[in-house]
Image 1 (spheres, rainbow, N blue to C red):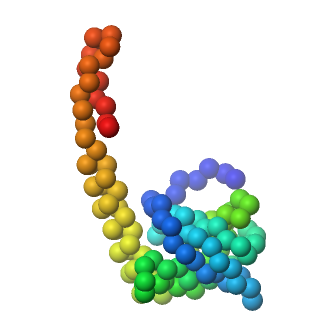
Image 2: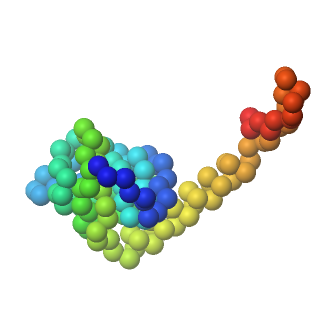
Length: 130
């Protein structure tokens, strides 16, 4: 697989997903999400280039529906899905959820205490996050 810079930041999540590929239904977990795609694992095998639809539960009763996604990569039972078509409600919920994740990750990084510690060699003082 060639190296590519992702257009959007990915956020780790753990959301249940129901997905459809053709006439078959699969169940699994979304492990990370961005504005352009999803990483999920599931029990219904899919192949690169295959299209699917996703029902992702963010929190009860908030669900989003991705009308069409394309499988971009497969690793065992894990799939990288690019969002091709999603309605306005889905897009708005996704944007709100990702903004919330961004705020939480900024807060968790900024809340890490920075503690000066003496370097055993006494050459200079190091800053260590604990």
